[in-house]
Image (cartoon, rainbow, N blue to C red; front, side, top):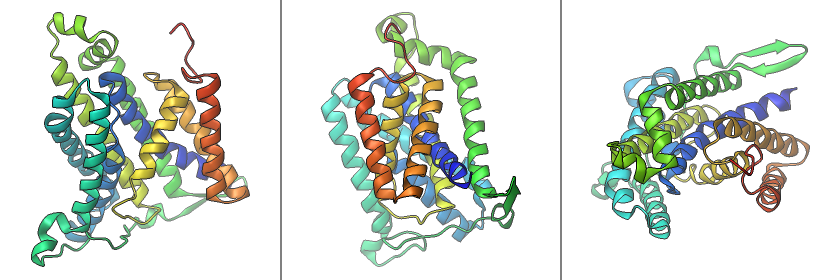
Amino acid sequence: METFVIGLSIASILFIVALGLAIVYGTMKVINLAHGEMVMIGAYVTVLASKHLGLGIYSCLPLAFLVAALFGLAIERLVVRPLYGRLLDTLLATWGIALILQQLIRIHFGFGLFGIHIDGLGSDLQNVPVPPELQQTLHILGTNIPVYRAFVFGVAVVLGLVSWWLIYKTRFGSQLRAVSAARDITAACGVNDKRINALAFAYGSGLAGVAGVLVSGFMTVSPDMGAPYVIDAFMVVVAGGVGHLLGTVLSAGILGEVQSFVATWSNDVYGRTVLFAFVILILLFKPQGLFVSRNR
């Protein structure tokens, strides 16, 4: 049961990161290799806000969303938009942005070159204090369930419901789905597809920023912490099917639990190995995703 709860929290993080990535790719058909760095940005927002502003994790959730969304908006406007339709160029450019963001953290956003060091930045590992109430443990059916893990799951549920409402119950969501399905026709009908692209990119980046806040509560924060998450998020999107919200939820749950159980039985290296093998099998035998029919 304890392993299941750990797997559920891993699945929750994967879901939040993959949801943002799926929205961006589904709308723009752009593979953003800097998406993992939005997780890192969210984590460092939490570190800096806790050290310099005295803010806790609760306050950092909307703050990290806003900061990561602004970073995403800038990346879309300055880099992705001029390269739109050039997949390989976009891949290279976003990978370069990921490396630049990592180095900016290491050199204190350039201030380190002048001998100015900002507490919370740099190459050193950082830790975020977790509120006392989230450090507690619940005892249910003889199983110890960390409250923080349950909190992570709760945030993922809320974000999933908000995203569902945004995509399927708002005018923006209707335009988003229309642009994803038929961009040229939608643009001909008067919808500003560039605006939809920018908002989708910002929202997806903001979700990754929130994931960064949650991750910082149970692991150390470092400049290169985001790289593994973009890989994991792509695996979730591939397994669930692009543009399929329920598929993203289910695939995140399956992959999170698989990794948790195998890692508990053996170690994390074996857990990730089994995870990659599982996704390769999906690509070979059901490339459209586990939860998408062929005629979709």
